[in-house]
Image (spheres, rainbow, N blue to C red):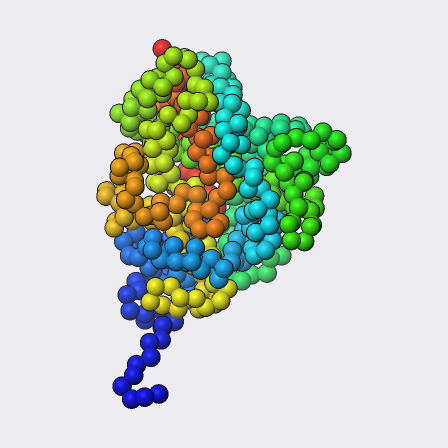
Amino acid sequence: MEAGVNIAVDPVISEASEGVAVSRSSLLAVFSAMITNPLKVIPPESFREPLVVTRSGGKLRIFLTDPVLIHEALTTNSAALGKGEDTRRGLGPALGEGLLTADGEHWKWQRQSVAQGFRHEKLLAFLPTMIAAAERTRARWHETADGVELDIGHEMMHTTFDIIVETMMSGQGAVDAEAVERSVTRYLEGSGWTFAMGLLKAPEWLPYPGRSGITRSAGYLRTTLSCVVADRRQSSEQRQDLLGLLLSAVDPESGRRMSDEQVVDNLLTFVMAGHETTALGLAWTFHLLAAHPDVEARVLAEIETVTREAGAVLPEHVASLTYTRQVFQEAMRLYPPAAIIPRVALADFKLGQHTIPAGAAIYVPIYAVHRHASLWEEPERFDPDRFAPERAKGRHRYAYMPFGAGPRTCIGSAFAMLEAIAILAVLLKGFSLRPVDASEPKPKLRITLRPDRKLRMKGVQRR
């Protein structure tokens, strides 16, 4: 090497790295947070700094909240990242190696197989089914006494599950919506302990609180959908739904087809991820509207204007409900159903001015990104006008990620938006919802972002 020539070497990122915020947490504190509410694992510095490093249990953990760095990690370096052990332990018992949990080529061919089922024209054809499900919920509310108390989270779970069964499985099979909801809830409620035991690298056979409930719930869910798949296999009828798509899917490179177990992996992925996340987004939306009657009035005025000639909400109305869409977008900013994206570095890669070492845990805390002081003005305030076209167009794509980001962005994001707008329009046209409990619910992470208590509301019919 010639004298006076400096060779730039990217330093491996650590707590001593320049420009890196460091958060100090003991293993005991992280373990406790995992059990009670993993949302607390997000370092407080992540709400104001672009990159935060912490270490617990000897493992380097990197929290990214700068949209530029998030893009570099999730898109530019997506091949260097895997789902990791935490995801496998947390979701694997129920979802196997479906679209949400698989990595590499196995993920890629599954994604390609189902992509055609989410084309725009296909989604638009689902709108009548979505509206009909919302109308059934509204009719059920009408049958009860005015001012009856509703568990709005449960009501939204019921409605979105109705839509999933009709659109993904053509209503096939006697699927018990109530039993499925109970099983999903029981499974997710035990997830804190699952992640906490993973933090300690405890063997998977080791008992812990809630483990038996998780096992029973996963078993019930998989058995139920296995019966649906078996029934369809035996039927000669061809149906143009997700189940039919999965059964006919062929890997273009190897020619292989999905086994029944793999079909169940993906069906269950859409049942859990598809109806759970949208239902939670809607429940939080109704909670926020009840606390902001001025916003609710604007939504209702838009719905009435758009539907005035027809009287009822029709499929062609949904695209015109722009402010209603903004309200749902803002609700998902404050309460993103999937609040954290976890990844693990499979190989060293460059991120900004640093090198991320293989084995490092990388987290994109969407909850913190959506409330970051440098990205949002008054980030705690509910303001749907943030998503008006003129304000949204200058925002970095990775500053708002309710459906994830990069190649693994949720394949059902457009489906969820159409579904949510249709449900809001139908139900708000018929009812005003008011909270029963005056206390503010706290978000609690159980894989998805749930309220720490039931959102009990009174449904008052509009006159």
